[in-house]
Length: 153
Image 1 (cartoon, helix red, strand yellow):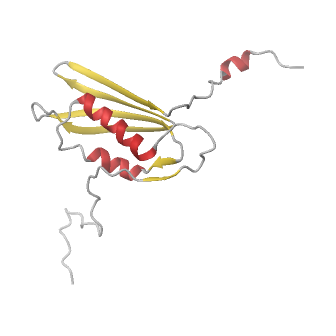
Image 2: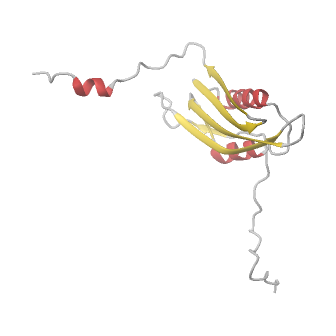
């Protein structure tokens, strides 16, 4: 019979956590006939400063209008985790995330924003976008303006 761990320790899970990976998995968009916005917040991104080796922290926001494919969230989590021990400049890692998402999903539109936490008294924001050739967003709907319009009749 296997020995039980001490009460102050959790038993190991039967399947260990997935390892970090640059592989982004995709699935078929369940509503490709319409534009809709996916928003992902990644508030705990970590990589290393390529000059000092000190940790850099960022809050990533991804806004995407998918086309035929959507990114699978567990793979996105493992993708971001894969940067933990890599040295990367803020601008480079933000643009690489955009390029990898475009390569994996070929979206109609995607914007990757990264708010890099204070380092040396400076906060850095990096935003990169991709727009599929020929794609234009639908005009915005002004619901507040509609509420003020006189009733037809």
